[in-house]
Amino acid sequence: MKRKTEILNLISEIEYALKFVKKNFESVMRSYEEYLKKREYAYLVEASFFFARMYGAVEYMFLNIASQFGNQIEKERWHKSLLSKMRLDVKGIRPKVIRQEVYEALMDIMGFRHFFRSAYDVSIDGERLGVLIHKWDRVKEMFYDDIERFLTFLYSLLEEGEDEICKGGEKDKRD
Image (cartoon, rainbow, N blue to C red; front, side, top):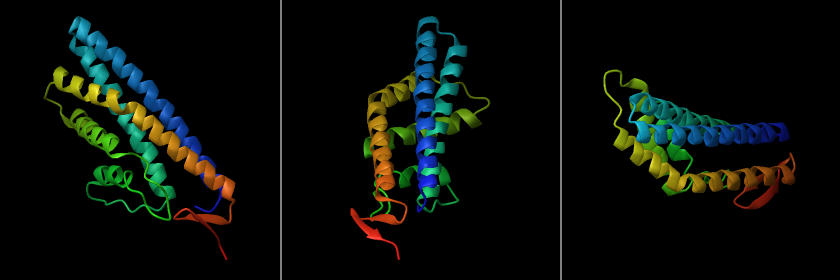
């Protein structure tokens, strides 16, 4: 990335998506707690809907990061490829966006989102959804910290100036 406006736009997109992730997970928790109290299937569907939306916001964030840093995403199985790229430290380009524990939780959530979006005649298993919700609840603070760390990296690019790039921790002037 060369231009200050690209970095600022990316920061704005990430911050917006992060708020959306947090808001949707709060909705997941409220709906799932209602499901546990009342055992009404509608609350389970609602929790699933918000969980799928939450993952969609994560994916939106990662797509923006990948496009700004020139990550090549495989066309086949692009969802998995995108998520995998976010756990890599790309030397001279960008640090990893998420740590391994977050990656593993997001892989499971991605699988659930795929199931939720495409399973028309299969019921949602409340216990299995509960396991995924609990898994995310355990790593969500790590995810938030990872995103904040990545935002700090982006802000550091702004401080370097428009004509400088980051190369393995060193600053090089472009010719």
